[in-house]
Length: 468
Image (cartoon, rainbow, N blue to C red; front, side):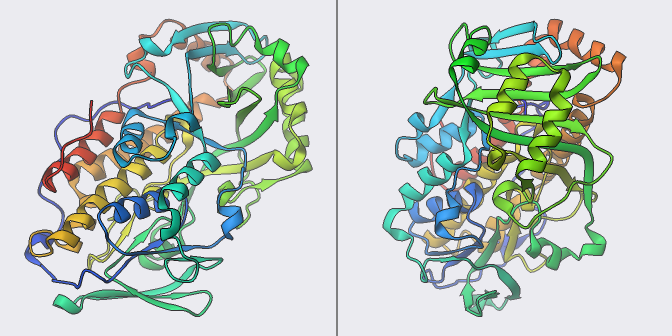
């Protein structure tokens, strides 16, 4: 939820990885594809990077092609490493798809009074931006263009129901079976299925890898800016396009944020509330397994009845069909490896390190995972003797990346509970902290760790690092 939060972990990314797969050099034919399971931002970026290095791929996506880029009213904070990746890959019109904020306005949930205003230029990274999920998906698909051929390089409406690894020198491969009955073979499998990854469950075992409910429920939606809402928003947008963050107070615990879209015609918003009961779930991972509709809107409307007019109007203006409610989850065991023992399957993004959105790192870490791993697979395509497939995937289990991932998940979990605490005095302390704390304490430069991870991959594979 917050932009680019978390304390920077010291030290450069170690070059020594968990398994010494650099001594295992399977000289696989370069025409064998990489199989990508999941067509969200992580999976699509994998495909874009692989295409850049002429590595064949097959993308498996469980939803239809139309639903893949549907506007579900959600968005992501974009940290500087992500935008430098977009620049490096020359994604089409990526700047126009971002919403760049002039600053951040912090306000009280009940009264709507301003607690503090921060200008983006004064933030540790000097910038703040976000992108709508559907816009990012479409941007990545536009870059892939005609390389996405249904039934050949992409299988829509399908999921992987089984996979097997065979490590045997030049014959090493992964074999997968799709829900449609189709079987595929690839040099490796990249799992980008999200927090409810069935491949992770199959690989680690449900009994050894339980899901952890973080005791927070979240609603999100998209509201058109009516004349009434436009007048209410003027106080929050005086400096231009601002990200607005409402802090809990008194009888109004929780968290509410919103941000205008780049076209200025609508806003994306989210609300978070402490929750003892695990909310209902669906199988629709485009909305993180949540549920949407009138019941979700009615529940939030009741919660917001004593909140400020801006919040009440935003929720009221949002169609019930655009209001989604989800529970927030991560994993109970944060010490599992992200690559398989045989080294040909890797978990990326939320499949590896699912987290609450309160540190704004979920999508940013997923994009960094995808870019680093697939840059290394590009080097394998060019020189399989020097760069092995297994070593490319094992970078996910480097000590620094594992430590960073665990720390992010734990901190995101803590912040989610603090931000939604029903404690009256806790709310006072939180507001006082936000009012006077240095910006580097509110928004530490966590993104540096993603940049280190990405730049090590680039330099070790003979490329220039991302620009500062």
